Length: 306
Image (cartoon, rainbow, N blue to C red; front, side, top):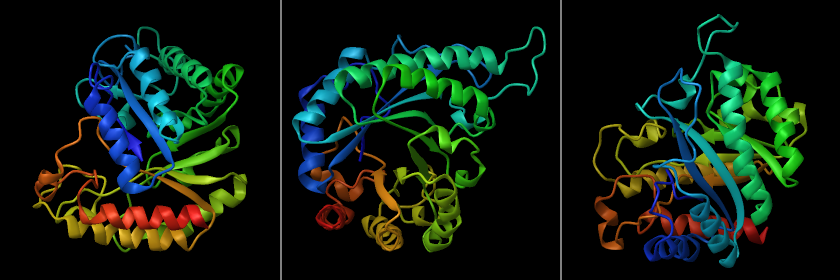
């Protein structure tokens, strides 16, 4: 399960955040957690990432969340992510393919991004995280293969654990540098009824690069229309826990039939958890108190037993 997004300063080092993580483990039987947080750049063509300032969580909050997760018996993936302050999706961060004097460049952006990621990798190394994610859904940046390889090499200088990258949905077969990471990661927000076809599209990528594969993100809001487009958190519809459950049933049936899918990091579980009494009217991704909760507990328990 992914916990804590987006990592707003002041929300992680609280009793309610610790209780949220405890309930996540107790009610879903997860054995891994992705601790995910965001730093911001001003707009899609900015080259400076402000990871030391609010609203990003502090280093102490990150370390505290990792330690809390480990105290609960979880293995931890640390996932620092860049967001755009004006709301533009990070997939659209991009620059000219060639450098032009006076214009922002990929080189300048990767210099700032590398500082951000290496700083996070240092925390991951010092706190004993088992997995580290170097990026998330950076679709326009994905083509910068040499720069990703250089970044990953820098991470490996200080972090000895497993390294992954979280590509966006439908992008698994467009990444040319999967050999640079230890684990292929993807965002699995595929529509109801399409899972078998999408997994068969992904299979040759896994075979070609001979790497373990997992869904670094996957989930569906508990909203009536969401199974048809589970990555769209703004899709119209009314709260519907049964719709979320149908999507999970479809996704997990396809995944469980393919042992080469090594896991699923579900999206997501907030640091500020809503009361269980509000579950029926909550239409977000978190399964707490919804029909999908017990289903996931059963699935994860069976997966661990096998």
